[in-house]
Structure formats: C-alpha cells, structure tokens
Length: 302
Image 1 (cartoon, rainbow, N blue to C red):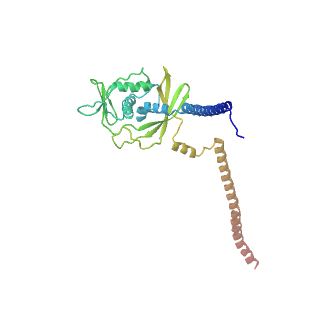
Image 2 (cartoon, rainbow, N blue to C red; image 1 turned 135 degrees about the vertical axis):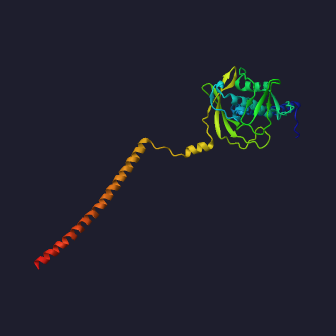
Image 3 (cartoon, rainbow, N blue to C red; image 1 turned 30 degrees about the vertical axis):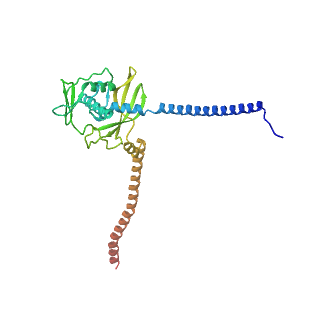
C-alpha cells in the first residue's frame, strides 16, 4: 500500500526543518558572540596590565637627561644648570631623530652647515618633561669638547656636527607609585658611537638604575626629582649575594676567647713536656757530681 503525505503533514515537516535551521543559526551566532566577548575581555584585561606604551613615553621624555647622567636632585630648581641645558638641547635632537627619522625639515647654517634647532622646540620638549610653567633662558653653553652656540637673531641653537654625545641611553624597566609620586625606574645603558648617529647602542644591559620622580600637576605628571633606585644591576646583586655575612659581635668575642683558650692549652702542654726533660737533666747532673765522691771514698778505704 502506497504511503501518501497530506499537504498538512508536508507543511508541518517543512516548518520543522525551518525551525531546526533557524535554531542552528542562532546557536552559531550565540557561540560566535560569546567567543568575541571573551576575546575582547581578555584583550581589555591585558591592556590594563600592559604599560609598554607608557614606558616608551617616559623613555622618550628622559632620554636627554639620561644621556648626561645627572646627579640626584630634589626639586627641578636644584638640578645642575649645564646638565639641564645639555639635556634640553640634545634630548630635543634625539627626539627629532627618533620621531622624524632625520633633520631634512630643518635649516642649517650656511657657513658651518650646523643644524639650526629652534628654541621653541626646546621649550616644547622641556614643557612635556617639566611642565608648561618652566621657562629656560636660552644662551650659548660649553660642553666638555664642544660649544653649543645660541643665535639671538634666529633664536636657534647651532648644533655641532659630532658622532659622539652623552654617556648612557635610557630603558624604562618599571613604573610604580609611592607616597603620591610616580617612580620611573630607568636602566642606564652605556653608549658608544662609531658612526655619525646621535646614539649608537653597544649593549642592551644596564650598568646601573635610577628612579626619576614625577608629581601630578593639572592632570599630568612632571619631573620633580631623581634618586637612587632599589633596582640593582645583576652583577652588583650577584657580588652582594656572594659576599660572606659578617660575624655578629658575640660570635667574634667567642672566637677570640676560643683562640685564647687554645693558646693557653698549647702553652700548658708545652710546659708539661719540658718539665720531665728538666728533671732528667737534673738527675744526670746529680749522678755526675756523685761519681767523684764515690771514687774518693774507695781510695780512702784502700
């Protein structure tokens, strides 16, 4: 007997298949949405803990100062004037080289071909580091082996053509807050220039660390101090760990007393060893003295 499907059953089967297809599609969309939300959440959490961009920002700000290894200071008014001028000018030059890849957009002196660095760019560089309220009086200054001349007419610094400048380059290794201040721990990597570049790294290993202190002003962080860092180079930390721990004072006294006791015991033993020898020598002398007396007595008896 041939089975026949009524139009109603056919329509019902068709609706069932449509519902199944729609349910599968909704399930796939829900799964895709869940995965998307999960990935977005993971990315958001990762971004909250990723301070790479912030480290790079402070690295760019501090490169000029790190170049010339300033002494620790408390308050920007206490920083060495020459160091600040060196950091301002050469830090600005470094920033231009890093961000623009060169100095094609800047004029040069027609006679000396020295780069002309506008003072307004130096002011802008310092404003990011020290705050907009800080003002530097621009003038020429002497460095160890060169003079940076300031032209009052053009309001530009004449940058000497050199392949060597500064002692260190910066690498920011840690950011943390303490007592309302932002501590930026900077590793100092020695520089060595063998070509015409401003900075030519010869190593990626810091030889020392310093903490630059920033305070919040008008919603931004500005440099206010420099201090020794708790972070130490690996070699220094290894040397400190390898050094023996000093003895406590009580241990030292005990060691001295023990040494004194050993010396006294040794002296006593030596004296005891000498005494029998002395007694033996005394007995021998007595025997020698008594021998002639015995001979005299024998002669008299005869």
